[in-house]
Length: 352
Image (cartoon, rainbow, N blue to C red; front, side):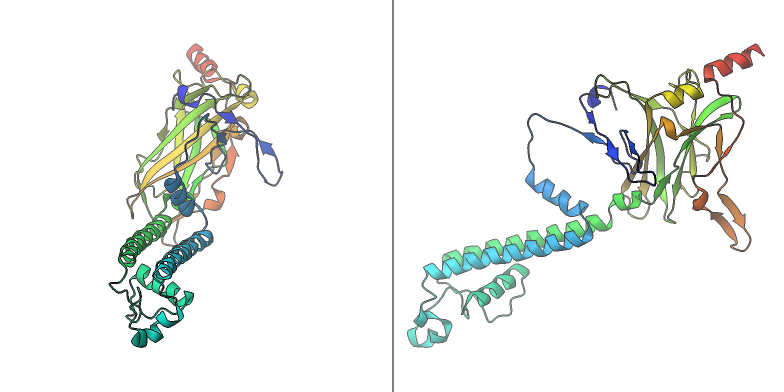
């Protein structure tokens, strides 16, 4: 995430309808969505990928409606093509209908076609490969043979397209990411004489996520006008002894040392600064093998100095196992923590 890649990105104010209905200016919302808009001088539209993405990203109700409309449009389109072929062949003359076939010895392009409705049913039979047997093409019209082949191919492609969309929606990592929780606030407290920035990540499902990794980036809101100009990666460790199975909530810890961008910042400096911490969780869903990614962020006002997360995991004899109380996931307790910067704190211990 280099500085060059994020130049000329405009930041917009997003109105979040919380209890206080405040509007907060941030790069990444708490839900993980980016509050960014990229403006390009020349835009190229990729129609097919956009349609596929629209089918997958929309709600299930609209996906089903879109699929039904797709089938109906294809059936109606080929119904019109069949009607055109038979009209050119004069199959719709009164004495050329199927009921007059024995008397006139007229061979139509398609047998047992009487009106638009029968043509529509014939189009469905070819598209879905049902083939009841009553309506069949003859050897009179080469165009009818070509149309039958094309509609059969289109039908196979359409069915594969619909099945792929349904499968993609059922196994979408986006839905799995919604079951991952980030603590509402990040906290700063003291561990082994070092100040540490900590946030928590939890998994509300019993299904496991393996090969877990957590990343964090400090976004300094230094702007020329309204243009973002700097991002810095934060070094993280977790307190779960490489909890690759992600069975319990993970506390990601950033130790504020000489290499940290927070090294010179005190509690007051952070509170009055315009900064944001982007956090990214990545892992692999064990059941499907698909990657999953969840994002969130913490602004300066969401960093609590001198707090500690409450314990949410306990062994209960009545349950005969460990219980994780996610209702207390965001709760913290106040603890005594120096309000000075990490540099000043290190200097203090060094003098002592």
